[in-house]
Image (cartoon, rainbow, N blue to C red; front, side, top):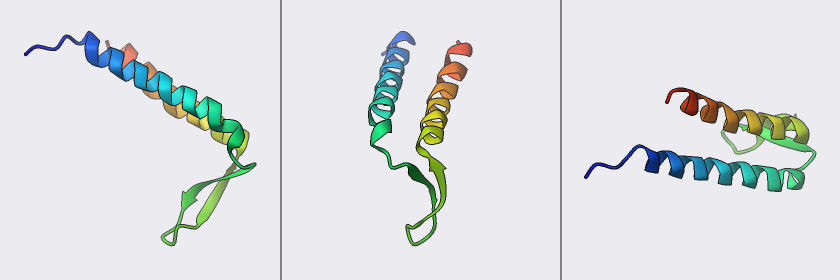
Length: 72
């Protein structure tokens, strides 16, 4: 069975949109200081501000989208 390239790309795009919507809708629920790295015991040992974390998540979602669409 030959699946057209359009189907997986639409699915991937829908997942990216869903992830972006989830990050955007929950960003204000994060604490002011967000743990971003955790040690072996599960305790955070590096932190980031809420706004910086939201910006980083936007970059982390946006970069793969740009790379994927530019490679087509």
